[in-house]
Image (cartoon, rainbow, N blue to C red; front, side, top):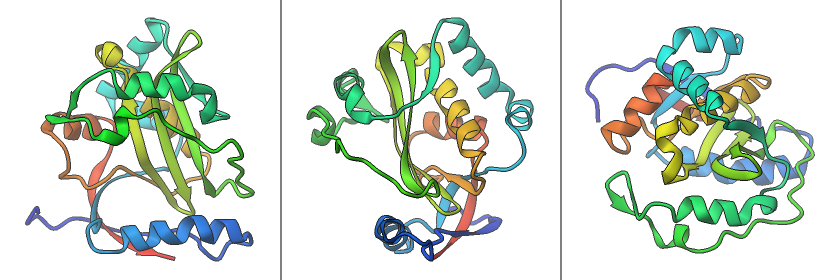
Length: 214
């Protein structure tokens, strides 16, 4: 854990929403995040316009643009079930990531609910991806709860990582979640390899001390 004093931020999951589904979705997140393990996280404040983000993060901007030139396309996914086989192909495209073998859950075919319905745009699972033609080659599941936009799962196919698909993916996620404001949170800042921290920092994530609020 870093000994340098970090800037602090309060992030509310807005559990006082009108819909019962919102508190049912957000409360387990609050209990998990507020347990002490996630008091220091990688945080990107969602403010301003996408052009502001692009101007401030040259490496991410250039690599995302390169992926577009190569024919890849960011997409807001309506139903994760439509891409279950592509998600499985992504998950099994590399045997090791972050210096560790992929866990058994990634080696099983994913199962998604057919009836994923969210009455509130501020409390929901927001799925995003990068397409090569009709095929999904990278995905991100963002758990939106009030001011929180949590990077729950994010992965790219091993064959396309060098093309910059993960930067195109994150640029699209930032643009989509800017509509709702708040904070994009990507695990602890000290988690993963130096390569992952490079990726997060080039995209604008900073280590912040977080107080989680209902």
